[in-house]
Image 1 (cartoon, rainbow, N blue to C red):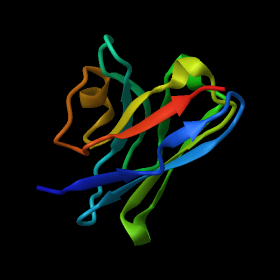
Image 2 (cartoon, rainbow, N blue to C red; image 1 turned 90 degrees about the vertical axis):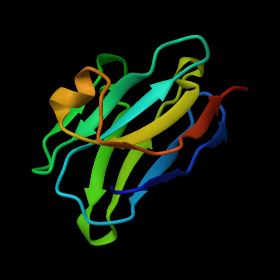
Image 3 (spheres, one colour; image 1 turned 180 degrees about the horizontal axis):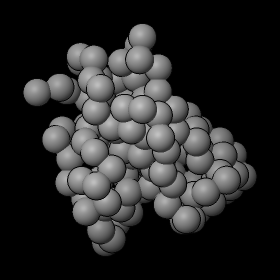
Length: 119
């Protein structure tokens, strides 16, 4: 089973930017999703990129977040721009199809990286 490691989280002021990385232990042709979970809330899909580079964004992040993948590095990125306090959460990446991701399922999960947006 492929292993995933997220990085790039941190503390940023409102309006700032971060780039999250999800490095896979092996090449995968599967889709990869980014999810987030805030304290007391359910984990929710925010973006997904398929093996054919088709992308999906949850409405609240459209126009602010961008997902991309670098097959040569087995890495998927999530660029977070115009960050808001409500974007604060633990962000997880996961391997799986878009249909799996929409119902919160995946074949493999990373350990998560904390994003905190605060002044």
